[in-house]
Image 1 (cartoon, rainbow, N blue to C red):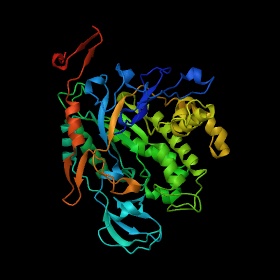
Image 2 (image 1 turned 180 degrees about the horizontal axis):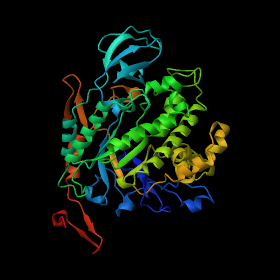
Image 3 (image 1 turned 180 degrees about the vertical axis):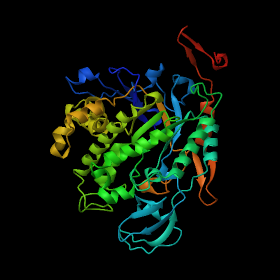
Image 4 (image 1 turned 45 degrees about the vertical axis):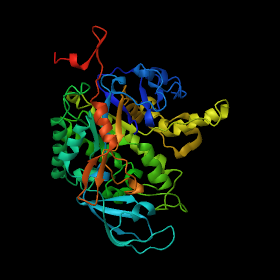
Length: 484
């Protein structure tokens, strides 16, 4: 399990609100605080880490989480969201993939008139093939016309039923860009069948909820929508290089606007980008993810890139696109919604806690991981350590761009979205990992079965919860809660 964090906007939040995020696997907590915008103009923001004895549920009013201690639902404050997540490319389509690779580890899959690209490592790909390929005994396996399945998860009723059975507050899913805009652009036309598919899913979530779930007053499974989860339309990749070009900002903004217009009446929680750090680094640095670019001599699908500059260029365009879309969403004032990025956060410890240089190394690691995308939305620029080390390879923001970025600052958000709801196509690892809450039997019509982890959540989410009556400073048991 992983705690998913995001910096969300809410138009009602005051400008000087401080932010707090708690993240980490298996209840390990990392906390950071950023100073107010007024202070940030005078000094850079710092990310502060607490030692493990301090990384406990102190924010929730509890002492240390002891080793092997199982968390309880009533530890968490009212409004803390528990949900499960998926991504469109990984679970959505029943798609035939024809491998047409000439010495490169790339699979191209047709998806409603567009093509998407995924890098498949040898270990993951071998278990996916339905017939024996012709292979050369080296790092580059040549596949010739072999047909495999991506993933077939189109049974919306069953997915929502299992979310409800687990007592989940929310479901986080992504909208496939190429399914809504087959050519990647608004000028290329809208696929209204794709629009109807997502409306059906959102309506199903809204119609299902748990009466026992006091954290969810709307009595529904709340949809949390990711606008981009690493599935750049192939049409835009071919046209101008995808996120390597600044032109992606307009096309992404147009796509987001279509999403707001068609789903914004019922969706109040949006993520502009999923884990931009991973996308920039692995897709354009190591080449482990699509489109698989790296410097010449690297082991990737397209060793004609520049691993020292392209990740920063892509990250810059992601931030510009985020700022545009976050500010666009403010025009939908009647929606009362929130929007932000879903950031991946790693925890770092110095090699020697007593050594100054080791502690500085930790701070730099945090800057290049969390600070890369967090500091621009809070103070309008990259961390000082990045600027000093990367130099001119790190692009600069114009004054108007800084203004938009800073106005996309966030507020306190606490939530846990387990990855993932279903066993899925796990990018470069293929079908090898099975860490979904729900087991998918790919040999028997993709039938689903709840794992022990799913049944644990079912019990966890239905446990008695504390409900706070702020007016009288008392804690009510759920049985005493009324509709009044």
